[in-house]
Image 1: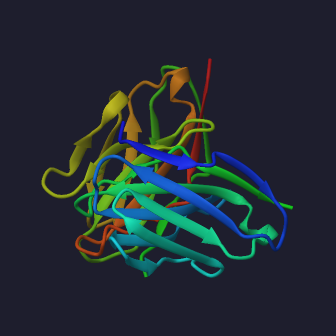
Image 2: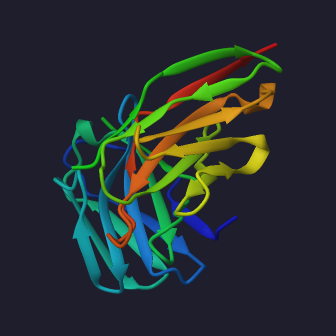
Length: 111
Length: 114
C-alpha cells in the first residue's frame, strides 16, 4: 500500500469554526489531491497540487483552501465550516498523472 | 466537460454468478480509465486501469474490463463473484497530461448474496 496517512480520521465540529485536515505521504510523489465523497456523487475533486507551493482548484473548491509547503504534506482548510461540508474527505497521490493512490479518509461532521 | 455515468446504483447477485458493472464516459478524446473498489469504511483501492494498448484489461481479484472507444464504455466484469466482493465500485476517467485529475462516476454497490 502507498504510504498515505490522513489526520484526523474523525472530527466533529461546529458551524463557523475553522478546520484543517492533513494528508501526509512517504512516497515522494509530485501530485496530491483532495476529494470529498458524498452519497450519489461519487468523489469530487476539491483542490490539487502539482508541486510544492503549486496548487489549483478542482470542481468543488468554494469554501476550501489548501497549502503545500513540503512535498510530503498537503493541508485542506475549511475557513468557516458549514453543514454542507459534512462529508468524507480523501487524499490521493500520484507520480506520473496516471494512477492515484488513496488515503484512508477523514469523516467530518459539522453540527 | 468530462462526465462518467455508472448505469446501475446497485447490483444484487448471487455468489458464484457472473457480474457486469457498467460505465460510460463522455469524452471523445484520448482518456485514461480506471476502476476502483471501496470496502466499507475504507479508502479506494485500484482494481484496474486502461492507459493504452490492449482493450481488454485484467485487474486484481479476478476482475477485468473492456475499453470500447466507439461506445465510450469501460464495463467491469467478473465471471464468478464471492461474498468478499461486496463493496462499492467506482469508474473514473482522466485526460492524459491534464495533471491527472480524476472524474468519478456515482458508484455502484455490488451486493453478493449467499
